[in-house]
Length: 291
Image 1 (cartoon, rainbow, N blue to C red):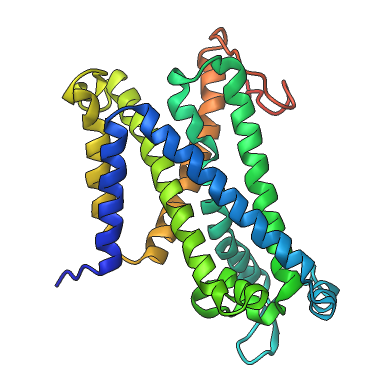
Image 2: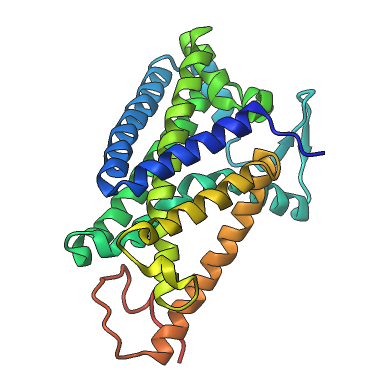
């Protein structure tokens, strides 16, 4: 029997609300995205700053004394050496969260047709967006090692390391602060995905790979891609637990990244004279094709 929790209901309501706002025009979604992103970054950098100010020297030294040794820390505190296969699985499992954190780095390309001076601004958006995310997440994890023993990081309740760190930094009020940060971050993330994701359906319709009506930019038809996306996202909300969905999506993301990279080689082979207005780091070695 299907059971829908209050959290799932809230998720569906948020998705529906943000979808409706974005059907009214780009400006509403852009305003939400800009304001919540700035607020999210301020909160994250505040947490990082206070954590580094309150660094525990003994914890820091203990965490970094064997930082490059790959081993498993059991709940009883004992240390277990990984076999080669188990180490590969542990690294792959650990990458799930980092893949999710940076997955939206390329979403700006979905709205390329609405960006001013795309030849310049898309590249800059991809570079600075990825750089900011890398700095924020790297700094956050460094801060964790400054205030929490590695055992507490490895076995934080429900894998909520940020909650444990915030409690150490701010006391009991830390749980409330992190809850607010998570809500802000989730709301901002959902809006960004809704704002950019529907453009994929529009592009697919233009290429004959989706319903033709989604190609329209006027009237109710222009909203169809957004509402189709809303229905699909709401369905996923009631399909399983968050962790299961995250694992599944991360696997699919990697698969499509591989296909995208392969597509670059194919297109350079099949369309060598096509216009390529974007500059690429390491050209011509990195983006070159195999002849």
